[in-house]
Image 1 (spheres, rainbow, N blue to C red):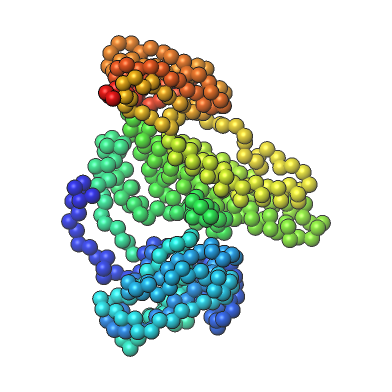
Image 2: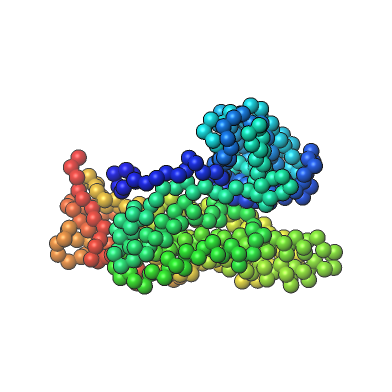
Length: 460
């Protein structure tokens, strides 16, 4: 990094106070045992790395106040805590100690501060850390923080997050010029520098990566966090080169996927409330509420998932990115759509309408994905290309066009249809070549036939 761009700047971070990362969250429970102050435990900050609290040098009594806001099983949230660099809690599992809906406080005496700042660090083990409140009390100062919440009695409101990140504008100017071209480099760089390490986080680690929970916040409020998406999209019309455009569209699809994920969470929250209301209603009202309230919410939820899915597919070019699709289908959709869909059908007494279910077929432009790309082969090894071709109707033919590097006309060779959307070809190669693949109006790579994939032959 030091070789890439100048990093000469004044670093204000050691003198700042606040939380390192994390977000505010509300606990499921409304009343808490083992405390006289239920309200204090109703909000938490979770997924933070640390709290830094400015106090004069001296020794302090530190009280760390916890509750388990969501989980109802042992082993779902486990973390360590350090005070001034020393580990004071190891493998803390709040639920294992007190369960859900109960306060859990730890008091540490004589914690020495020598640099004007109390540092409280959280070390992840399982899921993410969380804390409800912090009290730092000594002869020189007393600070009480309502983590994740507003000012409350003698507790201050939660501290503002610390901006921990170094300036990046000059780096992104160079990077955006290479990625997207000079026409949009400065404007794109400003956006990337602004959102660097400040992106909203729609998904979380919930029994694995890419997990989601329904969001009770209205989408009209959450949507404001994604204003940068349309701002970035507005630059697209200035890009002309296919290579620049392909890379721009990759980032745009990722940003739109994040926004669609956040919208899905809000739609899921609305649907969960409507479905829960129908389930809890008297038997005679359940079908009516399911039809009038839960079903429209379900249709909106499906529309949000479809948008989310369509943008995610646009980001796929490797087997790892294909794994993101399988994670969505195996980890996310059963919780979001499949199980609740069966519950809704039971209340309605009939199958869900088509608009209340995800379609089974692909809808979108013809797209060629080559997830494993070779750039060199040893003498005597064959060229083996496997391609996934997404299309609303099966394309015919899917062809590979190749020629000796920079010489003559391209020769067309059809790929064999292996199964479903998979096509493949294996052929001998004795010299350096360049090639591209075409299916209907789609080509791979996007710059073909002007700039193609190359294979260099090396000696064994």
